Length: 95
Image 1 (cartoon, one colour):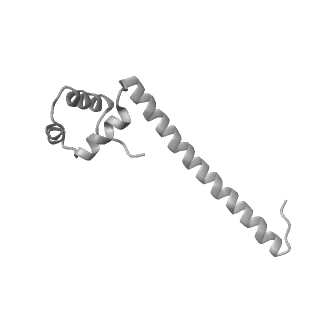
Image 2: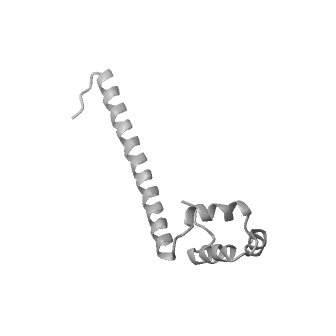
Image 3: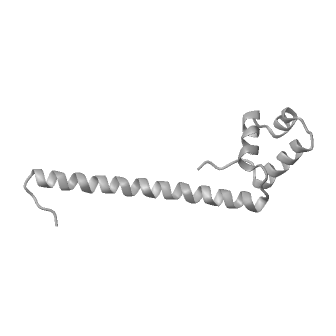
């Protein structure tokens, strides 16, 4: 998962500035970010406090780790299956 260049507290502060009426274009220019990035944040982080954002990021990291682990185990299982199939074709038996 790609690391954000903005910390949780920075994201919260920028969102609060927007809620208080600061134009999005001004915020984007000030913080050197695209408006597309800004508009992703409210849908992802809207209504969260800092502890909720931290928990979300922890869960996203765990999810990525588990997906990678699953993919690796799936590849191992396919290789074992392939090896069993090749062994049977050549008259060998697996232990």
